[in-house]
Length: 492
Image 1: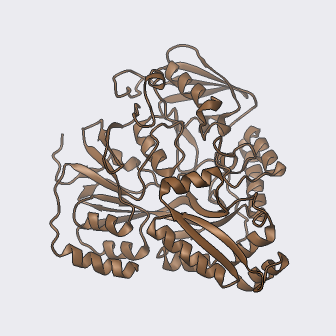
Image 2: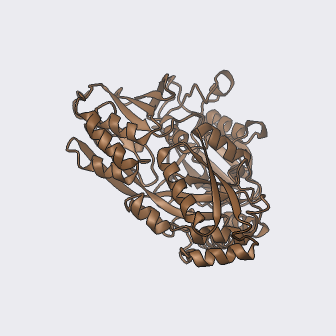
Image 3: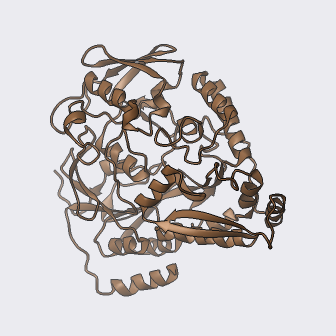
C-alpha cells in the first residue's frame, strides 16, 4: 500500500507548482488540542506549549535541570527557593512574569477540581509562598533532592486564570505568541524575535503530508512517516532529511483490571509472539532501537541489565496453554489504535504475528481525540502508544504509581503494586546515587511483571524544504523553530 502511495506521489507531482508563502507550514500527524501547560498530556500539545510558555526550569539531554526563567536554591530537604531571573521574557500582553504568576500556576495546578495530569508528581508540594515580586518558596511534605527537575511546567499569568479559557486562548511568555486557531484545527503562531509566522497544520494521512512537502505547500515534517516515504523523500534534491536518535518510547499497554490480561501468562505469550526486530527493520527502515523500559539505559536513572523478551513463538504457545487457551478455545483480544495509517499498519503486523501463535486480535481504530479519550478512561483491553519527550524519572510515578490513575496521572492500565510504589517513593527522597538504584529496581520489577510490552525507541526524523537551521531534538521537541529560517525570507 505504501509503495503504491510512493508511485502515486510521483504521478501527482508532474503538474505541481511550488507555492510561495512567508509562513512556515509545519504539517503534523495530529494537532495540539490543549494550550494550557497545566492540563496538556498529549505529545503535540506539550511540544507546542513548550514554545508558548516559559518554565522555571528546563532539562538537558541527560535529564539534568538548568535555569529557565529562574534559578533555585535548596534551603533544606523540604524547602526550595526560586528566584526569577532579571532577563526573563514578558508575557505577550507586556506584563513581566512575577512571583504571583508562579504561585498561581502551581497552586491551581494542584487543585483537585482542575484535574491536572501533572498533579500526582507534584502532590508533595505543601505550600507555595510569594516572598516578594521575584522570589517564591516551595515547602514540601517530604524530602525531595530532585525537586528542581519537576519545575518544568510553563508559567501562566495569574490574571489569565480567571478571565480566559486558557486551553483555547493561551497567554504565555514563550518565544512564540499564539495568533489564532485555523479552520483545519491547527494554529498559527508568531515568533516574537522577528515576527516569523509558523502554522501547525494537521494532516492525518502520511502520504498527503509528504505530498504537501513535495508540492511546496508545507516546509516541514517531523516523524510519523513509513520508511518507504522517508526513502523516497531523501532522494528528492529539493528536500533535506535529518535524523537524531530518540527517547520516544513505544509500547503496548494492558488493562490490568481485565480478568484475562491480568494473568501474567497471557501478557508473556503476547510479548514472546512479537518480532520487534522485523518491525524495526521493515516498517521503520532501521530508524528505531529496541527498548526494554521507558527510560533509556544511558539515562542516569535507567536500568542497564534488562533482558529482552525474545521473539519465541513456541514459548508463546506454551504460555497460552498454561493460561488455558488452545485451538479449540482461542484467546480473543481487542486492540485499540488511532486512524494514523502507519500506526494501523503496525497494528496489522502485530495482529498477524499474534495470530501465528493462536491469539486473535480484533483491531479498532478511532480519530485521535476519541482514541486518546478511551485510553484515559480505561475503555480498552490492549492499546499501543508512545511516551514522547521522556527525560526524567518522574515518568515512573506518572505512569505506574497506584495514585496516578487518570485524571491525576497516566497510569492508564490501572496497575497497582505496593513494591513499585515504595521504590518510587523512596527514590524521590534519596540522594541521586541511591535514587538511581531504586529507580532501576522499579523498572526491573515493571519489566518482570510486563505491565507494558516494551517495543522500541523511535528516532526523530525531519524532512524540510527551503529551510535552514532546523534539526530534530533528542526528545522530538519543536524547539528548533526558534532558530529556523526560510531561505527566501528577507532578514530583519
